Image 1: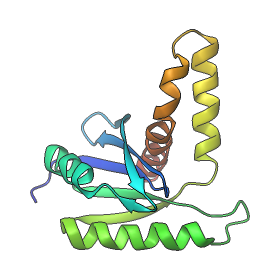
Image 2 (image 1 turned 90 degrees about the vertical axis):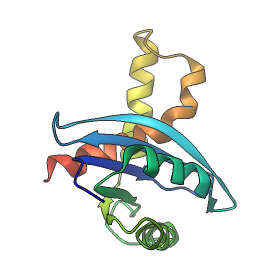
Image 3 (image 1 turned 180 degrees about the horizontal axis):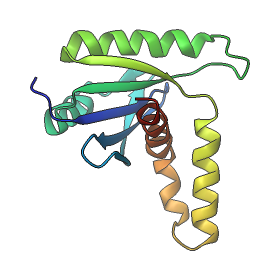
Length: 142
């Protein structure tokens, strides 16, 4: 894969995977979509389409940890997901601490609702917003 300056952020979950896209040129990220999972098995066709469309240089997956930094069952599942991404797409995959990103996404959504910028139907995009927060955090450390 050639260098595109594009990064794909993913917030892994057993029911949904939030996806966001970021780029080196502008240093910005935005939520994209939510990919469904069936009992923890990702919709690989949906992920294939994202990777084919955006051709990311790096995929950043949120590493779920307890607030004290300890690993959990979800940490192991996200690590296995990351390994599967590496194997499937032959692209660099990095994991990034995602502690409190879901709360930040909920807070962001609540504020947007209060300002009239979001409706209840937009709540289904919270996982994509969480992916965007993970990606922005990773970008700020590069």
